[in-house]
Length: 170
Image (tube, rainbow, N blue to C red; front, top):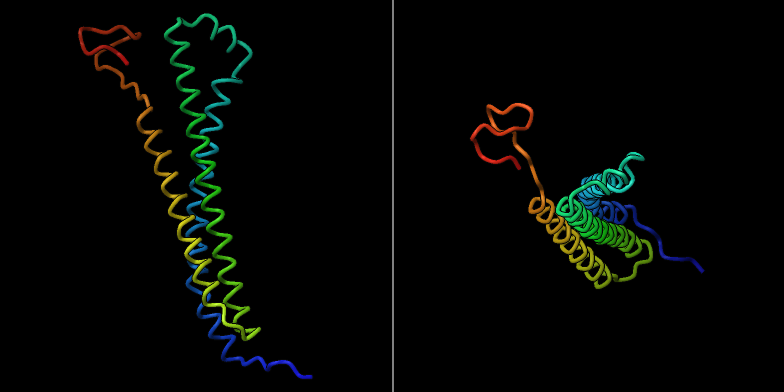
């Protein structure tokens, strides 16, 4: 019993249809790279604050109560940002996996000569929604980072940290 004959034109059409999702996959990979870099920086900062040099524990004990509270606030913020970045990476990875399944379904449709348009549509919709969720979580992490950042600008005309009548230091 002979199986269905695979037409080379059908395969080339499947390749053409798969090019769009492949470009989307490339874009998602770039986004994941940026997100992974941010997550690494968040983790590094948390380690710097908690695992620093051996004298860090002595320094923390010597800190004034308000400075200790500031340190705890920063650690809480870093933990929240770490959670958001991790969730964003998970959602975007899910989007990439769903796009891979779209590509596979496009080829299976041609090879098996089975109508899978409903599956392709469902997978692509899921990929798009997962990407939207991932980008929204990433945006939330960026907003949290910019809201909690403290940039201490030096006051002009000061030496040794003493203020000479200018604005108080941060």
